Amino acid sequence: MTDNIFQRLAIDVRESIDAEQLVYELLNRAYPCEEWPDVKVCSELDLPLNAYGERGQVLLYYVSAPEQFDRGLWRFGVTFTVLAADCNNPHGFARHLYKTVQGWPFEESTTAGTVGTVSVTAQKRQSDSKENQGKNVKEYGLSAVVTARDSFKA
Image (cartoon, rainbow, N blue to C red; front, side):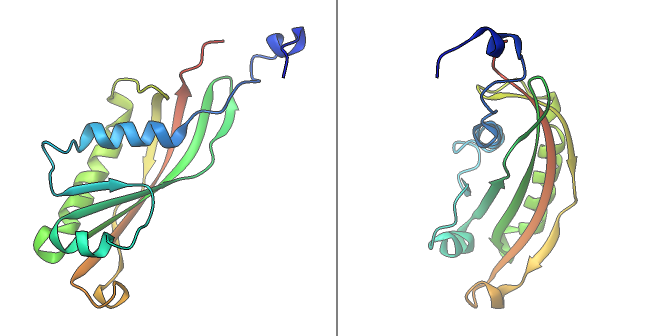
C-alpha cells in the first residue's frame, strides 16, 4: 500500500498496538524465570499445563483485540487464569498477580507501548479439581481492561 497525502494527514490511520506483546513483556518482567522458577507464563493452552500446575504455578493469559479510541490510544481486555495445586497457594499467587497488574501504569514502556490505566476485577475461584482432570489443581481467574499508548511515532 502506497502512502498518499490523505494517509499522512489522517493521524489516526496507523498499525494497531501489539497488545499481546505488551502484556507478554510486562508479565515476563514481573515473573522472570530466575526469580520465579516455578511459574510458567503462557498465552496458549496446551496439554501439560495441569501436570505443570501440580508442580508449580501456571499463569495463562488471553488478550482481546485492541480498539483505538483516540490517536495512539488503545483499549483492550485481558483475562488471566492461575492454575496450581493447593500446596502451591494458587489463591495467593492470584492475589499477587492482581497487585502486579494494578501496578502496570507505573512500569516503564515496553517495545509495544505504555500502559495508561488498568481496571482489574479481583480474583475468584473458577473451577475445582473435578474440572481439572480429577487432579489437585485449582483454577483462579481475574480480568482487566487496559488502556495503553502505542509505540508508533506520528
